[in-house]
Length: 347
Image (cartoon, rainbow, N blue to C red; front, side):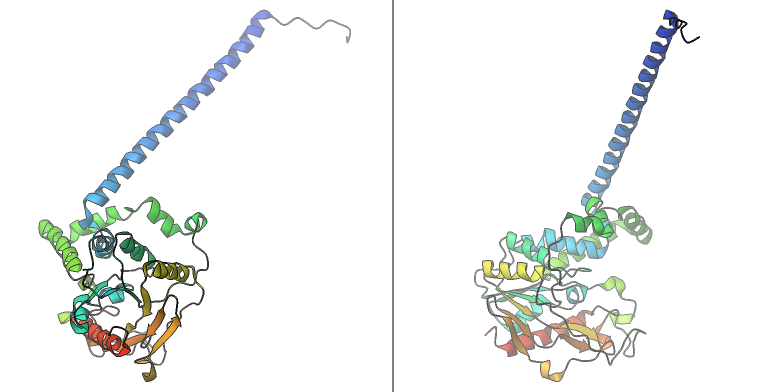
């Protein structure tokens, strides 16, 4: 059996096998083309939707939350316009988060400090980083003589790279889809203002313009729910602790500090820490010995601490648990002016 010759392959069968392979190859190629076509359609549709939402985000700024409108206006308009005049001897930029946004009135400080003194409130809602807006102001040619901080720089020793962005879901989403909340914001805006759409649009622009005219001060009225924008005198929260102090920890080593010091040497400005603020009962008052403190953290560049870490005020000066009403803003600004005058640093 093993010596019998193998039967010859039938020519028709051979051709049939080759035909099947060719058919299979053609089918695979067709499927690949279909997949590529579908992927292309998906990319085109996705790009069109992304572009449409991005355009709506840019062209319809009144749909954004108020905090975003204010922050964008400070970056896009306030720090890019000429902020100081040649005769301004003291050119002040004050930084912080939303507490300072609603508490520091630049025009009032200028009036109390005297001529040739001009200040701006560059605090940003929901933001503790101050370098981006400071750098934006410097890039536009607005150079201060003094940068005043109400919150410390962070303690990160290294600059954030692409890997840090990939690990931070919120930052990654915000970078890729800055308009990600637009559908929700639009629905909320339409629902809340369905009887006064045109007026609501004008209100947003009026608030934006008023903030710029007030050199960065902005009253956060949307979170005020009490008559006359005043908390009750006995207002408190379960988290309040009148026996707990809240010292401001300033890290000795920080990438943000290194960058700030580099900018200070490059542009010739000084840096100072000034008090933040809390409600009475929320935290313990700072020691009385700190009220007119003036200490130097470094000489080149000059970095100093003015006064206590924070001031404490009665609830009636607040519109909500965190943010001051206009009366409170005048009180805080006046106390800040007294502290700066007493320091002798602006004589």
